[in-house]
Image (cartoon, rainbow, N blue to C red; front, side, top):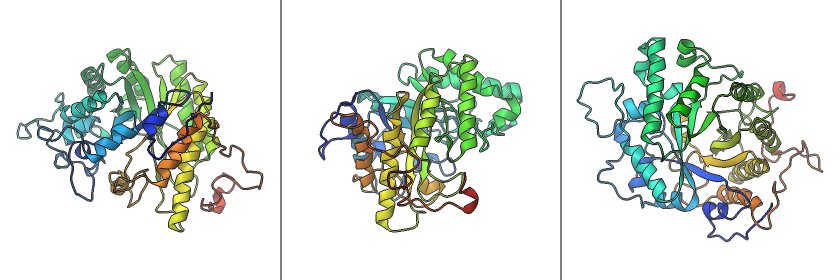
Length: 418
């Protein structure tokens, strides 16, 4: 390519993505409460496991048609959505039961309530939006009663869950995160309930069941802190690549890899610092060489722990959103970016970490500088743009400055050579 358009203030991420040299996903995670109801609460309808409850969800039988302010922004700015929480196993069967009568004694094994997700999915399809299913198998959102099961019982429960969930949405959800966060920080398999009771083959088996449940579905493995080749979290990033390579070598039906990209601009040390655009680009390239597509799957950029002025924090957030995505878009295997929410009013970060403003719209649903930075990155593939957007892809620029040096905190001495 490249091709480009001259962007006006009215240009949205979605309209821009329709006028670039190749199709990409520009997606966001969504929640049912702000999607279908206008409300004045300072806090969102909770998205995290720790505080999720049925009281956080709207009565969708009497709610509107999805024309809230939140909904209008989602449909105008994004061409894709992912259901942030309600499609996970425990919410479907245990913690967020929707209208199923709670007085009926049951451990909910085999009982599913798809009410909220059905409503979200149908809303998106009516607006010609792609829907990604998240997530079929993740130890963190597995129903509590699975802990007491034998190995064979767990195996059958997982298989039943995959077939039930994918079967219900067949033809409507064609892209699935099958397994999420199975890796430990050192790149080995995490000691979760599935590894302990089923052994390391459980990942491969989940993909085979998912493919059998819907042979037409695009199947993805998703993980966090795996975005950088030879950068922060190197061992985990290498473990991510090796896991994907092993699955491909074993002819497992896997088609894509998701790298979450929950970044902390104030992070220091091996596990917390932000990777460089080159490190992200190189990771995408080597995964693409396996024959897989790659997406940035849950992006947000925390800034509250970065010491300095508001202007410095804004600069950092803008550069991370722009440069990481512009660099990623130089790789043919990269198929898009998904944000983990779009407004600071509705972010998991406030529940799981601390007060922050990690997204591209503020709490009043106004576009932030980070929005325009992301839009500019997408515009590198539009008419008149430059692929890569001039992002530094060397260790230092002509003046000897490294990427992010204007805002990135100094690393601890023990990490100077990391």
